[in-house]
Length: 473
Image 1 (cartoon, rainbow, N blue to C red):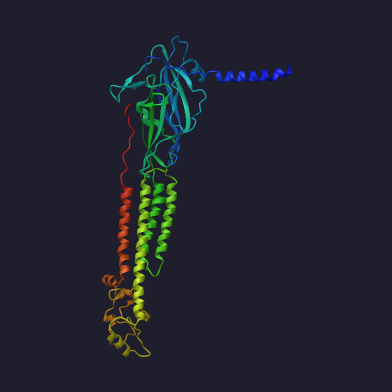
Image 2: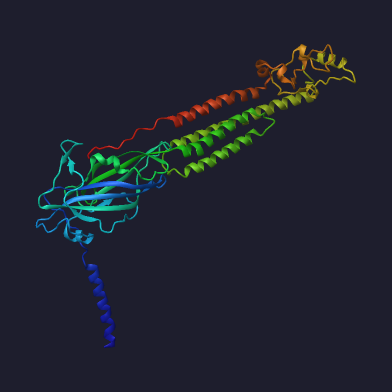
């Protein structure tokens, strides 16, 4: 007997397991055939938050009331009856609505949301198929009773986001509602067409970073090719506009300041500052802003408006980096030529050899004039020019500095006085600049205008208008 006990127990366990697996689950009761039934819904938001552009999702907390009519031929069900979910499942048909775009399991916060009512708290109407946009009155059959499911839902929902105008974009937060039953059995209708704008209550918490524009809905047919089924879908949508202040102040303004600083680097003398290193540091700063901006943008296959702005800023800085390199090379070549002439004795000062000799003859040991104006105490050597190597602010004979020997023409020295305001004119200043400095003076306003106009075109374009539609209410 002991030997038979173990096989008997194994067989009994297998039989029990088979019975559990083979036990059919409770099937949903189907709506009566022969006509289309309607499920009327009403919605009101409690809160919408965590709108995630990268995940293209948002979290919603809202109430939704579903009203439909079921057969009550014997009149046994009354509004005084307390009904549960199991009672509805086992004794009548239900719309079996589901949110197609829910990311996770929908949380239902009301345990027993069902009740019988004498009449809905709104006037039931259904779409007029012959006149799109219009409604027809609807009333239940005399042998039917109204059932209401008043439930509160919480869940994360996916929604497609068009980021091309980011951070000035407008986005739809959508709820895609379908039924378990096909379109020829059940259709979903927004119960209060005139109250769709009241989806957001007055005391609803602010949607951080967004501004509410309008609400709406539209209906359509969803085809599932795997089973050939046609299902009625109601899309409830809320149009929101992003508030771009965060991106304007933290990313766009910071990037523009860096580019403008890079432009003003041209004001520094080539031989007095490492202009290329300063430009490279600005480039590194833009890369940092790019990483900050990319954290709020999904990896989409197109350029957003912020991406175009950052790319334009990078291009401008890269162009300025090339200009710095060209001007530096030009300057170095000219300096090398100047030093070569001076080393060979072909450039002892300004003027011809006879004037240089005259300067030497009039010099004394106590009051000697150097042929190089850079050694004089009241002058500063400016950038040499390949065309005559002129210095800034050529003085007039009347403004001859102290210590100058009589008979020597001061125009031979072409010096920049330390008190430049005495003889300063725009023409003298411009003519005395080295060609590289003239290019610096021209590049600064040109780059300022090009960058400012480019940013205005990129960020100032109008955002396409978007509206909720009512193609088939």
